[in-house]
Amino acid sequence: MRRKLAAGNWKMNGTGAVLAEIEALARTYPQADVDIVICPPATLIHRAGTAARGSAVTIGGQDCHARASGAHTGDISAEMLRDAGASHVITGHSERREDHGERNETVRGKARAAMQAGLAAIVCMGESLTEREAANTLDIIAGQLSGSVPDMATGENLVIAYEPIWAIGTGLVPSPDQIGEVHGFIRARLERRFGAGVGRSVRLLYGGSVKPDNAAAIFAVPNVDGALVGGASLRAADFSPIIAALGEA
Ligand code: PGA
Image 1 (cartoon, rainbow, N blue to C red):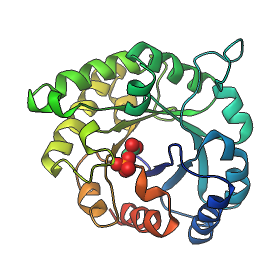
Image 2 (cartoon, protein in one colour; image 1 turned 30 degrees about the vertical axis):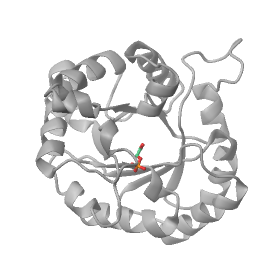
Image 3 (cartoon, rainbow, N blue to C red; image 1 turned 60 degrees about the vertical axis):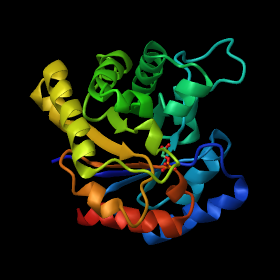
Image 4 (cartoon, rainbow, N blue to C red; image 1 turned 60 degrees about the horizontal axis):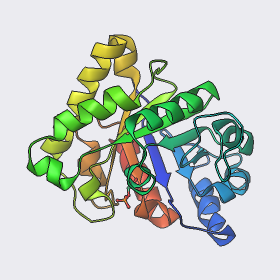
C-alpha cells in the first residue's frame, strides 16, 4: 500500500506572517493518515519547521542545486535544505523548466543530489496545451520520465508529480480519464524500468488547479496517490479539506 501524500507548493509567496497558516495546519493535523508536506520559499524553511514541530506536517524545498557545495552564487544545495529541516524537495517544476531553462538532465542531477542528501525528490513533469492538442502527451511524459528520474530512485526517495502545464494556476483540470491515462502510463513505465516492487511503491501525485471542490474526484482516479497543490495550499482553510479528502479516498 502506498501512503498518500498531500504536498503544498507555495512558489514565491510568503514572508514570516504566513507561518500562521502552518501553525493552523499543524493544529488541525497533529497526526494524519496521510503524509503532509509544505514547500515554502527557502527563506521560511527553518521557521516553517519550527511552526510545524510536533505535528504531521513536514517541510520541503522548491528546488536544489545538483552539487553539494561550491561556487554557485544564489543556489541552495539539497544538503542545505535538509540541514534547514526539509524532508522533501520539488525538482523540475514546469515554472523552473520555463523560467530557468531546466532540461531533463538538469532535473535528473538535482533529483539525484536530493536523494544522495537523504531527501525525497518530487520530480515534476507534464505537457503543454500545444503538446496535448497534438496528441503528444504520452511521448512527452515518456521523455521526461526517462530523462528526469535518476537510476537510484526507490519508493522512499522518489515521488512523481504529473502537472499538465495548461492546468497550473488556470482553473482548468483534465478529466478523470485523462489523469488516469497518464498516471497509468507512468506507473507502467516505472515498473518496466525499476521492476514491479519499486515501480508500484513510487507515489504519483496529480498537480494543477486542485481545489477543495474537485479534490475528491481527482483522488478517486486509479494511481493518484495524492496531489501537489499550488494556490490552494497557501491557506490552511483551503488545504485542510484537500488533505481530508485524500484521507477519505
Ligand atoms: P496550482 O499549482 O495548484 O496553483 O494550479 C500547482 C503547481 O504548480 O504545483
